Image (cartoon, helix red, strand yellow):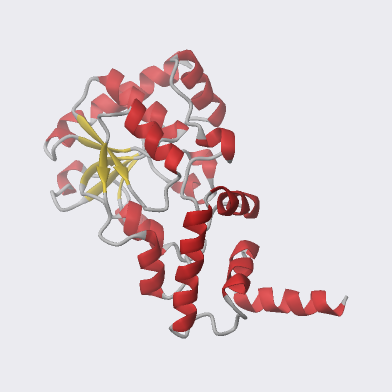
Amino acid sequence: MESKIDNTIAFIRQYAAIADKYGGYKVMFSGGKDSQVMLDLFRKAGVNYHAYYCVTTNDPPENVYFIRKNYPEVTFIHPKRTFLQLIEDKGMLPTRQIRFCCEKLKENNGKGFVATGVRREESTKRKYYKPIEFQSRTKQARVFHEQKMRKNRKVRFNPILEWREDEIWQYIEDNDIPINPCYEVRGRVGCLFCPYATKKELVINSNRYPRYFKNFMKTIQKCIDNGRFEKLKDKDDVWQWWLSKLSIKDYNKQKRQLRLF
C-alpha cells in the first residue's frame, strides 16, 4: 500500500511542470471516495492544482452539503442548461448508450491537464484507459506526447487508475478522511436520476426526493406533449420503461407477454 501511494504521488509530480504551463492540474472532484483519495494525494504531492465540482442540477443534496462543508477549496462549476432542460431540449431521457447529460454537464468542462478519479476495475470500458492520454474517441489519438500538447487540447490524467476499491477504502480509513453520507443511503455518490443507477437506486431516489421527482415527471410530460415517446402510454409508462433498462421495443414486448399470463 505504501509503495502504491508513493508511486502515485511520484506520478503526479512527474507531469507537474507540464501541467503548470496550462495553469496547473485541473482536479475534477465528485465528492465520492475515489475523488477524495485523489485530491488528498494531490495535496501530499505539493503540486499546483485547482479542484472543481461540476454541478449537474441532478445532484444529491447531501453530496453538495458534504463538499461545501469538508472541501471549501473546491470550485463549483454551474451549467448553462440544467439536467431537466437538457432532457426537454433533446426530447428524450439519457440512457447508457446515449449519455448526453454526462457529455454536457461533466465531460466538456475545461482544457489542459484534467485529473479524474477513474479506476480500471470499475468497468470494461475503463480497462483500456491509459494513465495519461488525450481526451479522444479514437485510440490512435489517445497516446500522450508532450510535444503535441497544445493549449486547446485536453489531457485526461488518471493517477489512481490502478487502485482497487479495497485500497481506496483502506486509504480513507488510514488517513481519517470523512465518508460521504450518500454511501449510507444508496451505496454510491452520483446523480439522482442517472442511467447507470440500478432500478432499486432510482426508486429510492424517487421516494427520498419527491419534489425533484415531481419535476422530473413534469419534464417527461413536456416531452410527451411535444410528440415524444409516442410508443409509450403516458409519463408513468415512460418512467417504468426507463427503470427497465430495455429498449422501448423490448419493453413493450415484455408488457404484452405479461398480459398473456
